Amino acid sequence: MGSDLGIGLRFGLNSGVLTTLGLVVGLHAGTASLLAVVGGILAIAVADALSEALGMRMSMEAQTEDGSPRQPWAAAGGVFAAKFAMAASFLFPVLFLPPRAAVLASVVWGLGLLAGLSYLTARSRRVPAAPAVLQHLALAAGVVGATNLLGRWTPTLLKVL
Image (spheres, rainbow, N blue to C red):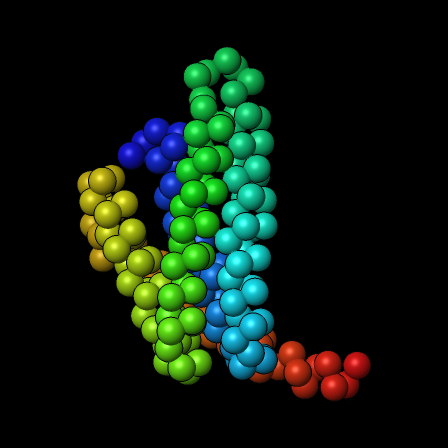
């Protein structure tokens, strides 16, 4: 999937998983509020997806100064559709499971999606899949750890301020 649409889809899938996973973990750690987590997911599904789609479009337009046949709207549409779908997919565990189980299910869901996407991308590039999968899972673990710590730390910080 080397087309501009494919580039946008891959970007949106990765970004949607990492961003939403971090948001779910961080908001739950800081608030344990279903309303905050669901509101955050919906905000990312719309605002962040649109923002990144526009960023992709502008980036691709900047690369087409030589008149090459790029399709920035296709890439932007791919980013928006993939990021929106990925973010929205995290609503299911959050809405239908108890809070702690929802966060655990979200982590498993997100890691599984990233591993699968990393594997498919590596295979399409004909490179060994294991290093790519491990790199992306390590990055996701860093996101989960950092957002968990920040979520837990934020209430303490706000008490001081």
